[in-house]
Length: 254
Image 1 (cartoon, rainbow, N blue to C red):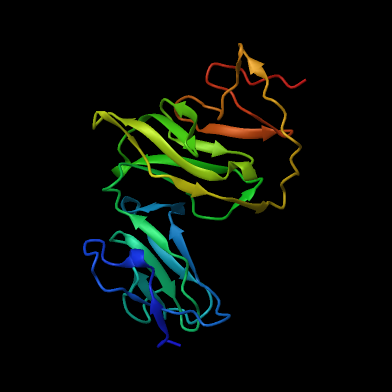
Image 2 (spheres, helix red, strand yellow):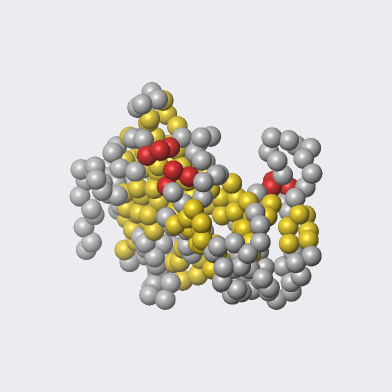
Protein backbone atom coordinates (compact mmCIF):
# COMPACT_ATOMS: atom_id res chain seq x y z
CA UNK A 1 0.00 0.00 0.00
CA UNK A 2 2.73 2.47 0.87
CA UNK A 3 4.06 2.17 -2.66
CA UNK A 4 0.77 3.20 -4.29
CA UNK A 5 1.08 6.81 -5.43
CA UNK A 6 -0.97 9.21 -7.50
CA UNK A 7 -0.69 12.80 -8.65
CA UNK A 8 -1.54 15.42 -6.04
CA UNK A 9 -3.95 18.23 -6.96
CA UNK A 10 -2.32 20.77 -9.31
CA UNK A 11 -2.68 23.61 -6.78
CA UNK A 12 -0.13 21.80 -4.60
CA UNK A 13 2.72 22.53 -6.99
CA UNK A 14 5.28 25.22 -6.23
CA UNK A 15 3.33 28.53 -6.49
CA UNK A 16 6.56 30.35 -7.32
CA UNK A 17 7.37 28.03 -10.20
CA UNK A 18 4.47 27.19 -12.55
CA UNK A 19 6.71 24.65 -14.33
CA UNK A 20 7.56 22.77 -11.13
CA UNK A 21 7.08 18.99 -11.35
CA UNK A 22 3.89 17.58 -9.82
CA UNK A 23 3.91 16.12 -6.32
CA UNK A 24 3.03 12.51 -5.62
CA UNK A 25 0.45 11.55 -3.00
CA UNK A 26 -0.50 8.15 -1.61
CA UNK A 27 -3.67 6.58 -2.96
CA UNK A 28 -6.27 5.45 -0.43
CA UNK A 29 -7.00 1.72 -0.56
CA UNK A 30 -10.61 0.72 -1.23
CA UNK A 31 -12.65 0.89 1.96
CA UNK A 32 -9.90 2.56 3.96
CA UNK A 33 -11.06 4.69 6.87
CA UNK A 34 -10.19 8.35 6.49
CA UNK A 35 -8.45 10.00 9.46
CA UNK A 36 -9.62 13.40 10.65
CA UNK A 37 -7.38 16.41 11.08
CA UNK A 38 -8.46 18.42 14.13
CA UNK A 39 -7.61 22.12 14.38
CA UNK A 40 -7.01 24.08 17.56
CA UNK A 41 -8.23 26.82 17.90
CA UNK A 42 -11.24 25.26 16.10
CA UNK A 43 -11.70 27.89 13.38
CA UNK A 44 -11.38 27.85 9.61
CA UNK A 45 -9.56 29.22 7.77
CA UNK A 46 -6.86 28.84 10.41
CA UNK A 47 -4.33 31.68 10.78
CA UNK A 48 -0.70 31.35 11.73
CA UNK A 49 -0.76 34.06 14.42
CA UNK A 50 -3.16 31.92 16.50
CA UNK A 51 -0.46 29.31 17.26
CA UNK A 52 -2.36 26.54 15.48
CA UNK A 53 -1.97 22.89 16.47
CA UNK A 54 -3.07 19.98 14.28
CA UNK A 55 -4.02 16.53 15.58
CA UNK A 56 -4.35 13.45 13.36
CA UNK A 57 -7.21 11.38 14.77
CA UNK A 58 -8.53 8.03 13.61
CA UNK A 59 -7.70 4.35 13.28
CA UNK A 60 -4.20 3.03 12.75
CA UNK A 61 -1.12 3.01 14.91
CA UNK A 62 -0.80 5.99 17.24
CA UNK A 63 2.51 7.78 16.85
CA UNK A 64 2.94 6.46 13.29
CA UNK A 65 1.50 9.44 11.45
CA UNK A 66 2.75 10.66 8.10
CA UNK A 67 2.28 14.39 7.61
CA UNK A 68 1.91 16.13 4.24
CA UNK A 69 2.40 19.82 3.57
CA UNK A 70 1.33 21.15 0.18
CA UNK A 71 1.27 17.57 -1.09
CA UNK A 72 4.78 16.60 0.01
CA UNK A 73 5.49 14.11 2.78
CA UNK A 74 7.37 15.40 5.81
CA UNK A 75 8.50 11.95 6.86
CA UNK A 76 7.21 8.66 8.22
CA UNK A 77 5.92 7.65 11.66
CA UNK A 78 5.90 11.09 13.22
CA UNK A 79 3.86 12.41 16.19
CA UNK A 80 0.06 12.64 16.02
CA UNK A 81 0.08 16.32 16.98
CA UNK A 82 2.27 19.29 16.16
CA UNK A 83 2.27 23.08 16.21
CA UNK A 84 2.19 24.77 12.81
CA UNK A 85 5.01 27.23 12.15
CA UNK A 86 4.58 27.72 8.40
CA UNK A 87 1.56 28.50 6.26
CA UNK A 88 0.36 25.85 3.86
CA UNK A 89 -2.13 23.04 3.27
CA UNK A 90 -1.76 20.07 5.62
CA UNK A 91 -2.97 16.47 5.59
CA UNK A 92 -2.16 13.38 7.60
CA UNK A 93 -2.20 9.61 7.17
CA UNK A 94 -1.76 6.55 9.35
CA UNK A 95 -0.74 3.05 8.21
CA UNK A 96 -3.63 1.34 6.45
CA UNK A 97 -5.80 4.47 6.26
CA UNK A 98 -6.61 7.02 3.62
CA UNK A 99 -5.50 10.62 3.48
CA UNK A 100 -7.27 13.11 5.76
CA UNK A 101 -9.21 16.08 4.36
CA UNK A 102 -6.90 19.09 3.89
CA UNK A 103 -6.58 21.96 6.38
CA UNK A 104 -5.15 25.26 5.19
CA UNK A 105 -3.26 27.57 7.58
CA UNK A 106 -2.82 31.13 6.30
CA UNK A 107 -0.09 33.55 7.34
CA UNK A 108 -2.46 36.47 6.72
CA UNK A 109 0.16 38.45 4.81
CA UNK A 110 -1.90 38.49 1.62
CA UNK A 111 -5.22 39.37 3.26
CA UNK A 112 -5.57 41.86 6.10
CA UNK A 113 -9.08 40.65 6.96
CA UNK A 114 -10.11 37.03 7.52
CA UNK A 115 -13.65 35.74 8.04
CA UNK A 116 -13.57 32.62 10.22
CA UNK A 117 -16.25 29.98 10.80
CA UNK A 118 -16.21 27.10 13.31
CA UNK A 119 -14.20 24.11 12.11
CA UNK A 120 -17.03 21.61 12.54
CA UNK A 121 -20.19 20.40 10.86
CA UNK A 122 -22.86 23.11 10.86
CA UNK A 123 -26.28 21.57 11.52
CA UNK A 124 -29.79 22.96 11.30
CA UNK A 125 -30.92 24.25 14.68
CA UNK A 126 -27.39 25.07 15.88
CA UNK A 127 -26.09 28.49 16.83
CA UNK A 128 -22.95 29.50 14.96
CA UNK A 129 -20.75 32.57 15.23
CA UNK A 130 -18.82 34.06 12.32
CA UNK A 131 -15.98 36.38 13.21
CA UNK A 132 -14.12 39.01 11.20
CA UNK A 133 -10.48 39.29 12.21
CA UNK A 134 -7.53 41.48 11.28
CA UNK A 135 -3.96 40.29 10.78
CA UNK A 136 -2.20 39.98 14.14
CA UNK A 137 -5.44 40.99 15.89
CA UNK A 138 -5.13 44.65 14.92
CA UNK A 139 -8.27 46.78 15.50
CA UNK A 140 -11.10 47.12 12.97
CA UNK A 141 -14.31 49.17 13.07
CA UNK A 142 -17.49 49.51 10.98
CA UNK A 143 -17.52 45.79 10.15
CA UNK A 144 -20.09 44.72 7.56
CA UNK A 145 -21.07 41.12 6.86
CA UNK A 146 -22.18 39.81 3.48
CA UNK A 147 -23.77 36.62 2.19
CA UNK A 148 -23.46 35.91 -1.53
CA UNK A 149 -22.56 39.55 -2.06
CA UNK A 150 -25.61 40.94 -0.24
CA UNK A 151 -24.98 43.06 2.86
CA UNK A 152 -26.51 41.69 6.07
CA UNK A 153 -25.69 44.67 8.29
CA UNK A 154 -22.92 46.69 9.94
CA UNK A 155 -21.46 46.67 13.45
CA UNK A 156 -19.67 49.88 14.41
CA UNK A 157 -17.52 48.25 17.09
CA UNK A 158 -18.34 44.53 17.02
CA UNK A 159 -16.61 41.88 14.92
CA UNK A 160 -18.87 38.82 15.26
CA UNK A 161 -22.13 37.70 13.66
CA UNK A 162 -24.31 35.03 15.28
CA UNK A 163 -26.74 32.92 13.22
CA UNK A 164 -29.39 31.20 15.36
CA UNK A 165 -30.97 28.81 14.81
CA UNK A 166 -29.20 27.72 11.65
CA UNK A 167 -31.37 26.92 8.63
CA UNK A 168 -30.58 25.66 5.17
CA UNK A 169 -31.09 29.12 3.68
CA UNK A 170 -28.16 30.39 5.77
CA UNK A 171 -25.83 28.47 3.45
CA UNK A 172 -23.76 30.59 1.11
CA UNK A 173 -20.49 32.44 0.71
CA UNK A 174 -19.80 34.96 3.47
CA UNK A 175 -17.26 37.74 3.66
CA UNK A 176 -16.69 40.82 5.80
CA UNK A 177 -15.49 44.36 5.19
CA UNK A 178 -14.14 46.85 7.70
CA UNK A 179 -12.23 50.05 8.33
CA UNK A 180 -8.59 49.58 9.36
CA UNK A 181 -7.74 52.86 11.03
CA UNK A 182 -4.05 52.04 11.43
CA UNK A 183 -3.85 51.69 7.62
CA UNK A 184 -6.34 54.45 6.83
CA UNK A 185 -8.33 52.32 4.36
CA UNK A 186 -11.12 49.80 3.90
CA UNK A 187 -10.32 46.12 3.48
CA UNK A 188 -12.44 43.05 2.87
CA UNK A 189 -11.90 39.34 3.44
CA UNK A 190 -11.95 36.50 0.95
CA UNK A 191 -15.32 34.69 0.81
CA UNK A 192 -15.77 31.58 2.96
CA UNK A 193 -18.32 28.87 2.15
CA UNK A 194 -20.85 28.13 4.90
CA UNK A 195 -22.85 24.94 4.36
CA UNK A 196 -25.69 24.04 6.71
CA UNK A 197 -26.13 20.28 6.81
CA UNK A 198 -28.83 17.86 8.03
CA UNK A 199 -31.21 18.76 10.78
CA UNK A 200 -29.94 18.88 14.35
CA UNK A 201 -31.65 16.30 16.63
CA UNK A 202 -33.17 19.11 18.74
CA UNK A 203 -34.20 21.31 15.82
CA UNK A 204 -37.90 21.86 15.13
CA UNK A 205 -39.36 21.78 11.64
CA UNK A 206 -39.65 25.40 10.47
CA UNK A 207 -42.99 26.71 9.31
CA UNK A 208 -43.23 28.57 5.99
CA UNK A 209 -41.73 32.07 6.32
CA UNK A 210 -44.07 35.06 6.67
CA UNK A 211 -43.42 38.66 5.60
CA UNK A 212 -41.34 40.64 8.08
CA UNK A 213 -43.24 43.25 10.14
CA UNK A 214 -42.53 46.87 9.34
CA UNK A 215 -41.13 49.30 11.89
CA UNK A 216 -41.04 53.09 11.49
CA UNK A 217 -42.07 52.72 7.85
CA UNK A 218 -39.31 50.32 6.78
CA UNK A 219 -38.60 46.62 6.99
CA UNK A 220 -36.53 45.60 10.01
CA UNK A 221 -33.05 44.80 8.69
CA UNK A 222 -31.07 41.61 9.27
CA UNK A 223 -29.11 40.60 11.21
CA UNK A 224 -29.74 41.83 14.76
CA UNK A 225 -26.94 44.34 15.33
CA UNK A 226 -25.88 45.11 18.88
CA UNK A 227 -23.62 47.77 20.46
CA UNK A 228 -19.96 47.48 21.43
CA UNK A 229 -18.86 44.35 23.25
CA UNK A 230 -21.70 42.22 21.90
CA UNK A 231 -22.38 40.04 18.89
CA UNK A 232 -24.77 40.68 16.01
CA UNK A 233 -27.59 38.14 15.78
CA UNK A 234 -29.90 36.69 13.19
CA UNK A 235 -32.55 34.40 14.64
CA UNK A 236 -35.78 32.64 13.72
CA UNK A 237 -39.00 32.71 15.75
CA UNK A 238 -41.98 30.65 14.68
CA UNK A 239 -40.66 30.36 11.17
CA UNK A 240 -40.25 34.13 10.80
CA UNK A 241 -36.70 35.43 10.63
CA UNK A 242 -36.54 38.61 12.67
CA UNK A 243 -33.98 41.18 13.69
CA UNK A 244 -33.65 44.70 15.01
CA UNK A 245 -31.10 47.44 14.54
CA UNK A 246 -29.55 49.29 17.49
CA UNK A 247 -32.04 51.78 18.87
CA UNK A 248 -35.12 49.90 17.60
CA UNK A 249 -37.29 47.67 19.75
CA UNK A 250 -37.73 44.06 18.60
CA UNK A 251 -41.18 43.61 17.04
CA UNK A 252 -44.14 42.74 19.27
CA UNK A 253 -45.49 39.22 18.83
CA UNK A 254 -49.26 39.24 19.01
